[in-house]
Length: 176
Length: 258
Image (cartoon, rainbow over all chains, first blue to last red):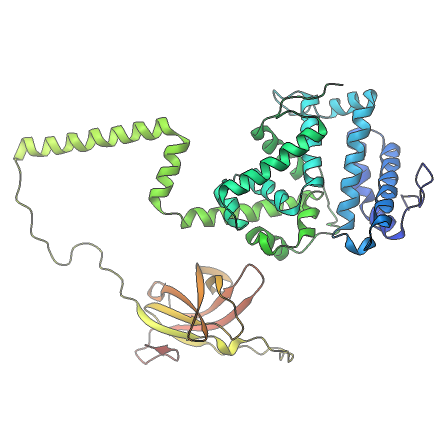
């Protein structure tokens, strides 16, 4: 058992969420450790994410059944928590920057971290259609091809994605 | 903290791809969907399960697999695109090079024209000669009935295989009649020899007189006689396999020749 049933703040973790967190724990802690250089801190943040997800689920009418992919949900909540912790703490920021200086070319480490935050937020907050548009765009699809795949016009597809990206960039404080 | 940095779209896409393909290793493939589900999501996102898209956000092996399927789809789309569209796209992406090629082509054509007419003068046009140039392939109409391949609820007998249908070894304009309950839309039709695809094509199935018909042109003269597997599938998982025997025989085949 890597994860406690209660987080650092004394909040209980729902059994289903705890099971999902336990399953992703090795990968999540490894990811967090890579970014923060501290596996204990990563585990604590994972417990906090699981507790937050449990609280969010308790407020839902449909409960856990309404979550399409609980593991992915907990993982993404964990990623956001790591990003927030890094942004709040200057010491963590310097560690994370050191982590992101590898193979970045002309892009500054802090800028690359902002890119990571933007990608994480985009994947967490947007709907599955916009997410799939992002995947296809990364693979070099034209807007026309993306529009055809989603049964819409090239312009509508581009507009939908741009709006989502603009909204999220504004929320996380990144200019585009 | 340094906030509000400037980020451009190309940077975001490049970083996003690198980040998602490396940051989330999953050697034990915990929670991963099967490969055919990923493929179906890539080929028909409208009917895809949103949970798959969510899983891709935190699993690099699945993300890389999905990207590979997208590349496959992209190649398929590009192969279908007519030549003149490719040229147009190319001229848009590298206008300077396209303009150079166009100017060079015009100069060469005009130069060749002037050289021919200055040395010999205009020639009378040659009469058309029979037998020159590749002859057009004559496809024979052929109805290939697969209605008996309808999936049943009864358990299949182990070791039982459908009997091979004889096909004449010549170019066929095939009307493949799909089983009752099949849907209109895009199908992938393949011919396989010992598990290796020797021919494949995407075709649209349409409802014609209460039957779902798939129209494909297949030049069987290219393949040596023998046993093959004729397969029909969709991205959503529909799959049919019918063994066929390509024969040189002069006798009429089992399929209905129109």
